[in-house]
Length: 171
Image 1 (tube, rainbow, N blue to C red):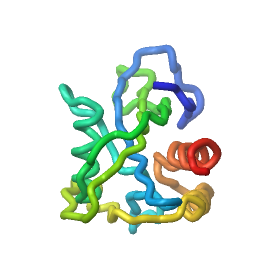
Image 2 (cartoon, rainbow, N blue to C red; image 1 turned 90 degrees about the vertical axis):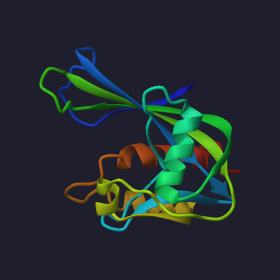
Image 3 (cartoon, rainbow, N blue to C red; image 1 turned 135 degrees about the vertical axis):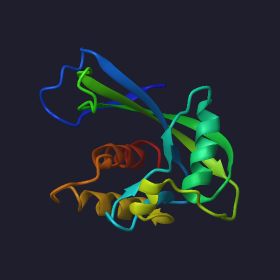
């Protein structure tokens, strides 16, 4: 998968040192110029449906599970690989120098209709709600949060991908 960007969430990390790794998948689901996004009613930000790939799980299986959990919707199929974003994050464990998170973005098609979300506790606490929103509106909404005291950790990554979609995918 093509690497679209590398994002450093903090200064001074040894990105070539002892690393923890995590791979995640993110679904890009269009309906015209609208995207299906997960809105945080507590933070006011929008993120693509998705999350970590469990051991033994394919990217397609992880996308299907995450779309079902976060949106209550069913994946029909993956239409295209869009690309990946590698984030360098300060590690939570002292024996590591860096946490490397690779998010793989796929354009997906879902089945019409909606079901029940199956959110984790932290997702419930963030007030995750699936919403359809215009591409320009979601970019503007997320950018408006860049200057708050503690923006969501994924904000820069999602803004980058949204702008990439606007410049390269949406006609």
